[in-house]
Image: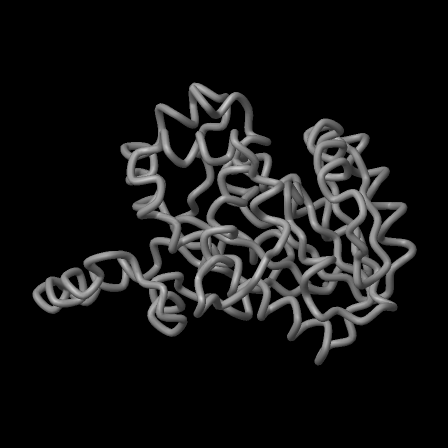
Length: 285
């Protein structure tokens, strides 16, 4: 199988960013995506069932998170961005961020080294730092958060494409650890629902599990889940709604909307909430 480990999913997503960048009407541009994805990234997409057809979801996720990040930085005084399981994210190079912003990418050593090698010669627009760390090691994670949190004033945390690979217990532990950083004010993440988790398992589950990257986390009520851990959900952006706004809807989505007219309101809402990007705000007790 093309996916050998969870880090390979970063190459997969980079292919989608390259696909969007190549469009004349691109909603974002990532000039580094193609080189980062490499041949392996393309092989993963070619191998996955409906690999190219599902690009819209990752493209929409990228664009919406771009918007949320810039909003927090420009309007809410974020001075530090902590990007966990950063993968092949290039926002520190491609977004119009202030030069004074501190951007910290954290990922496993192999991914951190791969990215550094392939981004050689590219100049970040802000104060960029890459930290190689295994976030599944609680002692390593807590030491990192203590160091980074103490140096920041108003921090934004990003976990793009991470939580779905963690168990609910692991997400709980991460949320509590993030909350120990008094400077961590906001947290942006994508979340799946139980319905989406079931669909993903049917579509991509075998490929992901063969590469030791099974999909695990899909809360029935994300607001309640994170609220109990000290994080208030202040924005819930349905990916289907955002896809329509950004004109990047899934093929045949018009048919789903037509069919949904004959569904119950509860069923329509369940479909709308299958996948989302959420903005969480720290709750201080």
